[in-house]
Every structure is written in structure tokens, then in C-alpha cells.
Length: 257
Image (cartoon, rainbow, N blue to C red; front, side, top):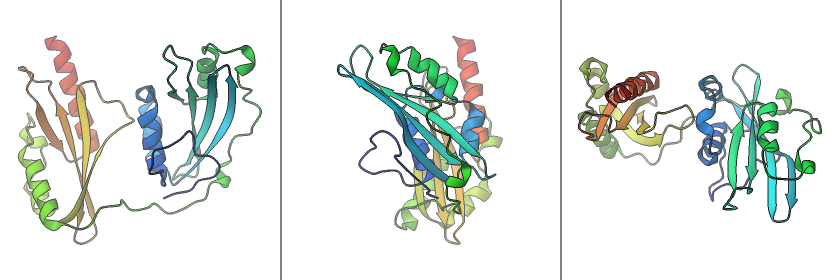
């Protein structure tokens, strides 16, 4: 599911992202304000088919620097969606910081707040936006699982379901899910980033590859929003149900406080 042109942005980790969702995960993982992105924007990016990134503007002077990057994804409906990244080292400690914005206006305002001379403000009319047709249309790529290990994957599914402590037992994956996961031959665990997750909560996707090639995901919520502060895990069949549970637990915690 990879399509890329130009520079993909600031320096990446040793393993460079190759697919549109990997590019998004790397961007969200390094930006300080990714939690401010609208949920609807992140939902749209979940359907991205291709990615293109490029340096938009830069300024360097007296040991300080500022760069802005354009990150554009081609969506399943044929439209393009762009996020703007601001990279600078103008903070008190001089460490490099990354910020992300949805619109050029937001980026322009954020850049204007930096303690840099006026000429460092980028001219947003210098470059034309990336047209959707410049992004290659490619079919969605399947999730990449590690080597098949049925014993390990089935055991992981069993332990995941066993530790689920959903207050409402009806919201837990049922016996049918447990039977289905006995056919698991590989699995993958990833932490969900991007869409807002209340402080003190963590959300994980447990994806399983079945013997017939189908994929099944369960969503685990970890938190300590219990009356005694005890660590607790809940498991849900969908991301939406898991996020609803997080909001409910967070609201209950605020009420107790």
C-alpha cells in the first residue's frame, strides 16, 4: 500500500516507513500535538492508499532552524488529504520539536509564534499543492504478520480473552470468537495512536491471521481507572466499542475525583 514521491519528511528511524499507514504512524509518533488532530481526519486516513511527502520550506540561522513538510495521502475515494509538519529547535533547551497541523493557516500561525526573524516566515504560495493524480493508485496491502506460529498465536488469544475484565460481560468477545481464534496461525500487537485516547489509558490492537487467510482483530484497553487504582484490562471486538469504554471509564474517574 505504498506510494511515495519526493522527501518523506524529517529523518526517520532505522527502519523507514513504506506504507501509507506506517508513514502516518511515524508522523503521529514524533509530533507533540498529534492528539489535537480531529478524529474525522484520522478516520479518513485509515483508508489511505498512497503517500507522498516533501519539504515545503526551511530557514536556518544562528544555530536555529525551522522546516515545514507537506504530507499528503491519497484516500480510497480518490481525494487527497494533507497534513503539515513543523520542525524546529527554538525551544529553551534547543531540542528538535515536531508539530502537526491540518491546514496551512494553522501552520502559518504556529510558525509565526517561533522566535525567528520575520524572513523566516514561509511563503505558502511558493509551491502548488500536490495533485491527487500525482499519487499512484495502488491496491490496499494486507497486514504483514511474522512467521506462522499457531501454538503461540492460539495461546496469546486464550490469554487475552482470559484477562478481559469488562464490567459488562455482554461486551466481551463471546465463545464464537474464542472458537474462531483457535484457528489463528500468526498474530501481531500494535498500539493505537492518533485518535485521542484519554490520559491514563492505552489501547492495543491484537490482530490474528487465521488458517483460511482471514484476519480478526480484538481491541484491548489497559487502565487504572478503578476505585482502588488497580491495573485492569478490557477486551472488545471493535475499536469503536473500545474507545467508547475508554470515554465511559474516564468520565467515571472524573466524577469520582
